[in-house]
Image (cartoon, rainbow, N blue to C red; front, side, top):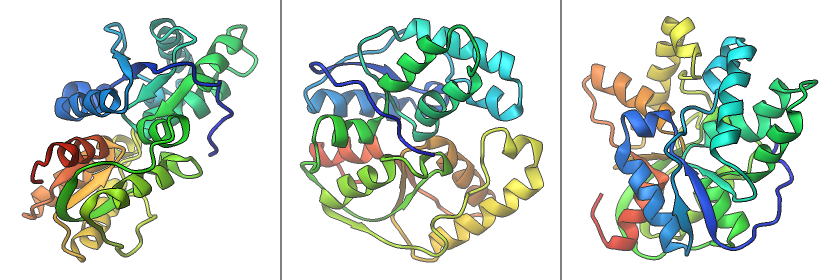
Length: 254
């Protein structure tokens, strides 16, 4: 998966897509994303009509439902304002998977326009706005989980660079860090036993280095891992990258 060519950024206006999981379960991650963008000088709007990126239907093979959802998303997030997404997985669904789903469709140009304007949060901060360091400090040992959907994209380097720039935040390496945690959207529903075993291994690998927090640009992966860890009786503290950045700049303890 590769990050597409993007339209040039004009000004600092952005539209925020908060993702289904932030809306339903991780509202503080959405709030932190708004605060981080504002601290970077952005004027943020959060369109109320937003629903889903369409990834679940796409991975289930229901492309007609996927296209229906993505058409709605294109209407809710009109151009030319950039769309910043609080999830590497959802961002990739819009800038990578959406043009595939609409190949040969008459409204492909509209979807391609949305694709060129879509950014994951840290990719936008680093590669659109030139933010390569983040102020503040966090006294913690952390690991970074990179979701599979961010492979080949600019998000992975951006997340690590921003984390490493925060004073006091020690980033730990852990075994098999690049392996999938087993969530995989609908995979965790269609193959629950395999998904659980993959998650168990990921949790064991993460806990082997005894981090204080597990950081990611994808709350879906972290929710999966934390659920498995909890059932095994292990504490597993998770934070979206935006929460880490917000707390660092405000001097909050993790």
